[in-house]
Length: 79
Image (tube, rainbow, N blue to C red; front, top):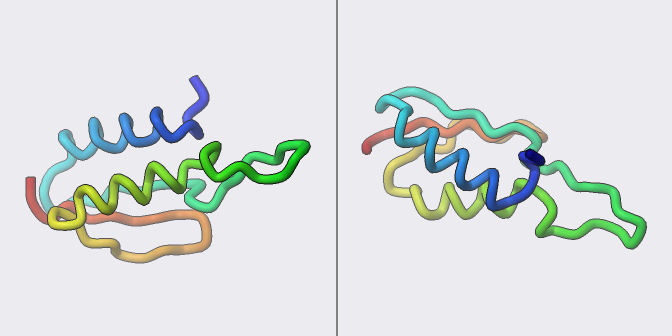
């Protein structure tokens, strides 16, 4: 399975969030990764769109701790 596809990324994020305890941290890697294609970069073939969707949907239940260049750290505040 190619985990860089947005549907796979958001499914994994939502499933993992359900298992994550309040106060614990989830880390998203490859936040700014893009697939090199012959015709350039295609934004839909990047995990960023799914990670952004997840953080927007769960914005009331999480805190974004920091954003290094290619990682995103999210702390769960509530279920």
